[in-house]
Length: 147
Image (cartoon, rainbow, N blue to C red; front, side, top):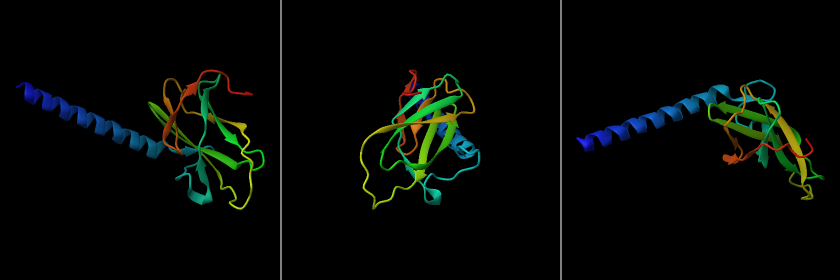
């Protein structure tokens, strides 16, 4: 009887995990939005390229997330935009830009750039993920640099 109970628990847990993943996939599909409020496809559409950000900060407004990326002084990113996917336990931010020219020499000096992102609900304890690398980014409660 204990063996059947254990198998039942495993089956229920598996169904629960699959249901949660399905809900997250639906939420991501339905709530994907760009910073101009319109629907958005993958960040690479339209000749744009996704790129990483280094840090995330909690803003004084709980419905605003600030992300930081590094840029070159000689070849700054152009037309930076962001895509946001919000789920109950997760916020995925993907920064995208006009592709960098491949025939241009750029310095690798680091200039801090900040992007303020409006959320539909307060960030709270949700994890922030960099969508370009699909990795979690620690959220700092300190003020952003120069912010």
